[in-house]
Length: 586
Image (cartoon, rainbow, N blue to C red; front, side, top):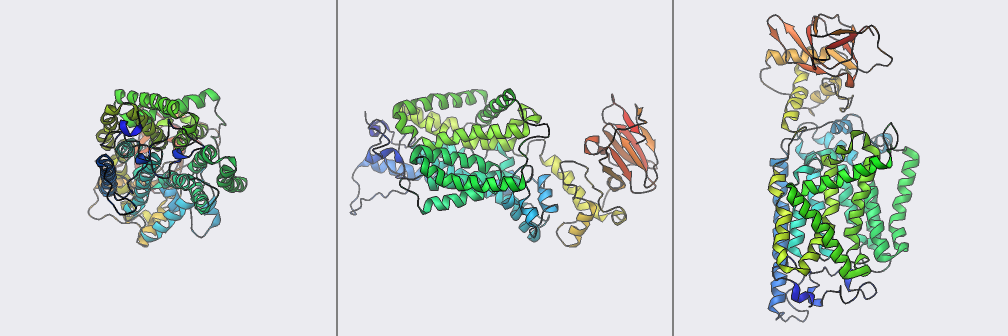
């Protein structure tokens, strides 16, 4: 039976191929894999013949209308998603940890600041974006920062659908598969956290290069533009390396090793120079993980991607079954020609997902295999998996046309649940509300000008040490930091006395003269005195019959407290009663 006869009119299982698809190349396919000419349509096809006469085939018209309807639905979803993500689902998000580093530690006027790696990543483009927005917006609104990452995310969704359509996935299946990523709450970090323009930017520009270089013929202007896109991907984050690998595999399979070398070689050379100059950190301070550790991490990453895409255990298992069974069917049907043609890009992206998991394992293995399921990793694992999953579903739909609606539903079942998971702990609204309140209020304190400028109101090793009171005061004076208004409750006012009156610092050397206080203790330290502590504790300021809100100090963020304000009566209590409060002479 021909593929035309097998394809349903609704377009879900229709093997309509983009005209750029290579499955019609005589040297790379056979009759079992080559779609009929009537199937080689996409959303841009005209319903009229070249000579102006109307196409008289009713089935063909239905297919064209179905493809256009799928495209319209997809465009509407993407357009509606932008304000939904920025003004609804992402409203919980404010500046978080790494955001502050680009705002406090980097400068547009310093080549060193622009090119020094951040956490092992080449991050020149994100730094430029952040610095430009800091000059224009400052801390006054997070929305412009967030709009950048949301726009990149939705662009990635669009490009992934294009990859699926070029691979022969029907319009409705492609819409459902790509649509599953639009409101992908488990990967919210790469969707609404502005800092993740690095990861999401590398994905977008890597996909751009993939699509530009995925064509027939010799090296031409499209490949040059693709190389430029690849350079931008490298300058966003280390994910650019993964996308260069994806482009290399795809072009190797479809256009030969010479073209593959031509489109990937310049990227490898450029990154090689960057590595020799900057030496970005490739692994943890404890060295490289063992092979079993890497394998467990990769397994955890892939399981995490299926769990996130499916949400429900049964749906996740069915998606895995679709991938394995559908890819086997697609490869068996088209044999080597399919792998070297329409399946090349989805299979390369699937391999890229595995490579990404390996790279993250090398750098992050100390966090344990559950670290592979962090939102920023799950997003990329799912994005790189979806084209192959869509191709697999299409292979099943071609064989069993009645399965098409069920496959579409399978992709969409988890969307409602995933859309409600934006803002889940640990970095939900209950994290950002107090953080924002502290930073926008503490400059109002009358004693803010009388403590050392390097005192950090929020002692957290994951937050830039440059986010100190001097930086905040300058930002407030220059209009880049909004200052809260209204009365400040006394408990909050006294909390800020603790935050500015105790500066948490890192010290070296072994402690000595340590004493454990099981129940904690009350102290009235002199200004300039230092306390070394070894256990987490909460500190409140006592003022007559009132007490401040508690401030938690963890020795992981520095084992010494320098007293910078006088006249404080402090109560120290153990955060974990079984450990008590351990104070040392030095």
